[in-house]
Figure 1 (tube, rainbow over the protein chains, first blue to last red):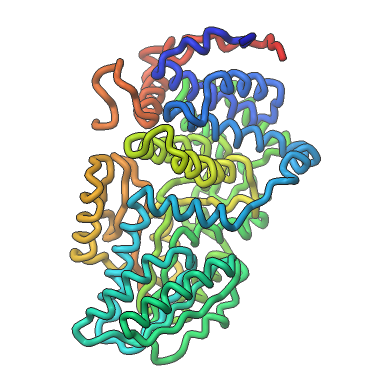
Figure 2 (figure 1 turned 90 degrees about the horizontal axis):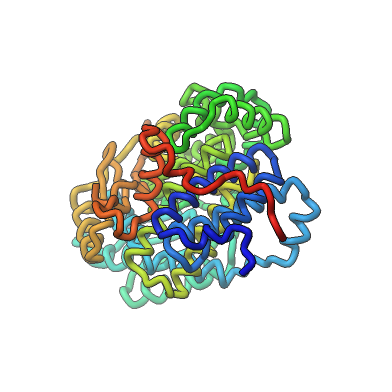
Length: 445
Length: 46
């Protein structure tokens, strides 16, 4: 159809996939260098091959190119704003897509099983239990907990759940469902709604009382706090990055070192200066985040008996675009592969999850910087360091919890889902790739 | 490795493709593979 690259359409799936990877990395380098003309050529080539309803790599490429295009367009704020001016984030869409993620993958369910079991064990014998849910979006987890608590040999406790979410509707729905279930089970229950973003949360509003046993549950929330003070750290020199970044790239593509050096020079010179919060060589200062530290400190100050943290187990918070591009390619490849093996290509639900959830995350990781870049997923080892520094100590997840979680995974009858124990925490994997981590903590006195 | 099908004719997962691309990049054993197509297409029509 008048394509300038007719040969591209004749590639077989494997060749096409490999070529797409090559083009994406090439394009990434041009975008990092601020070279619109070259990026445009690469994007045009990719657009001949990528497709949101094609094979896995075609789908991934469609979302990564959209993200790269967004990033380069941000150099023209007027254009970028004009093109995104009428985009509306519908609450209903957000709720829908979270629900689809919950339904289509076992990941959240496994995290909930592990979390609830840890809560049940920590709260044994407690008569007043307070749970703070930092992302109160899914009532299924707490309905299951209510049922478990009602079956306790010592009888159910007085239960209070404080849910935090930006959307009032989500919390109202949650309150309704949980109150209904608690009445059915005859458990004394109270639900407190706090409509707030996590980084604006007023700790006083949590109204933690003396005499109640507190558990905190954070699902996919802590990493968003890494964004808040990123701006403060941007001024540090990122020169140390040059070499490590060069090696990184060479592993994936044959790169001419001097060309790469030039690209990074341009990268630094063209206003695409990377945020440098994780650029330092010291792992501890690399983790430094004022907002995060003060948030964890205030949680510690509430003396929770237990805190369970579920996070995306990926390294998407690298300081350079290319580092994040590569890491994100690997993790979203696993997530898209997972859908490819479990859901038909024509599924509308699959398309929605890929576009509205993963596509948006990819866009955030690739095209945003500073406070806008919220999807700062980090690996378990970083969370362990960070929580350790904040005076939390690890609570090993119990055998009983892991057994339940394994059974749940096995019930999916799909070989690809795996669970790994690491540092007394759990990694939930697709094939060999860890995708989510679950870890439990208590205050170190 | 379960993610890499033994037959090249089988549909490869994106993970396997990335692994293959990484191998080709690091070992340089097959320098042509990522460059089978011309990369210097600077003339475009629009």
